[in-house]
Length: 116
Length: 111
Image (spheres, each protein chain N blue to C red):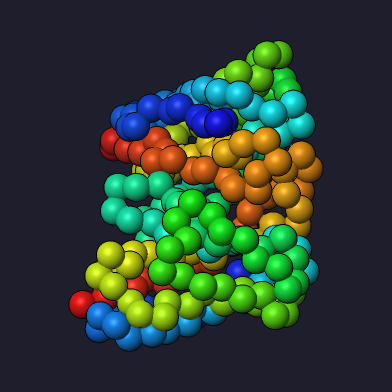
């Protein structure tokens, strides 16, 4: 009963390096989300997906790309990492979206990324 | 744009009942009200959801008045393990899938 699994848990990058964060969910959820959380701040939505093969921009999409090739996976990519992208990244999934009692989001444990 | 307003922080002694109120500006007719809890170094966790009146589960109670312009999360007899940040997120606008969490309410339980 894994729920939402994020890999890796920790990563240190140098400025300009690239990396991909992987999110996997085993609940057959249609909707998936990537958030970032900075110290003392709430969660800010980076990108989201309403189904396999679809992605959309959230509040803070610049510097990130995403892909949803399989329903259970949602990848977040940083093509050229910058120190401003140092943050904790959370992935979430939900069965449905707003207006439905099943719009509850289930979160992963997070990925702590430092960009030097 | 829809947004919520909640206190930045609250302190409570162990064993007391804690009520955290959230105001829901421009909540859409068909939106549910949900509350999440986040412990340090963990992802947020759903705790309770409601649409109208009162909902109770094993963790908390949620009170929503008829006009749905606010909601109150009630935690009975808090313990040190209830120290966390509590969020009442809102969708950012009509037709939006974007759930805005804000900074939440940091609850500190004092022994």
